[in-house]
Amino acid sequence: MSKFGVVIFPGSNCDQDMIYVLREIMGQEVIELWHKDADLKGVDIVILPGGFSYGDYLRSGAIARFSPIMGEVINFANKGGYVIGICNGFQILCEAGLVPGALLHNKERKFICKNVFIKAENSDTLISSEIPAGKVLKIPIAHGEGNFYADKETLKKLNENGQILFRYCDEKGNVNDAANPNGAIENIAGVCNANKNVFGMMPHPERATDGQLNNIDGRWIFDSILSLVKH
Image (tube, rainbow, N blue to C red; front, side):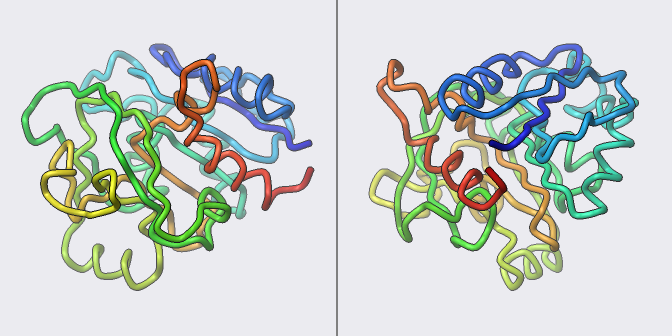
């Protein structure tokens, strides 16, 4: 069993979903970490959940990046600890410089909440190791600022180093403009850092893990995580 730490910021609204999935469905130990905490309490993996931290004032994630606990999260990541950011958590990781790129307003300038299709770009990361090559996953998104952007040089490095985790695609796995919900450059739905221990993605796998929701595609991601960390 691994010990997961789920950070809760003012405005987090997917923290309890994540805690439920990790505890009740995946059978893991979960520690709730408050944004003012200065101790990660010995967790193996830190998760920054979705929501609207600090009301998304300034930019999404811009204030949360300076929460007291983020100093500990950054130190943990810099020492090789696993950190995963989902949606707003991904935005916070970008603001903290823990993953490359930035998340801009959606191309249509509207909040989008719907199921999308994604596929993993490679299978050598913590969150994609169990996903078969070419497997298309149906995972919900819910964001207003999910339009991933990086400059040409950064994009080149991301592609060369295998740091692109997921791309938006259609249900047949075709990566094209029609399948891009927010205008993200190269249909990018998730990236990791160069050391492949910090991961950010916009789609919500925790919302596609309970069988009662008639979609368990998110379990591929959680199964990947558990297959590579100590039990």
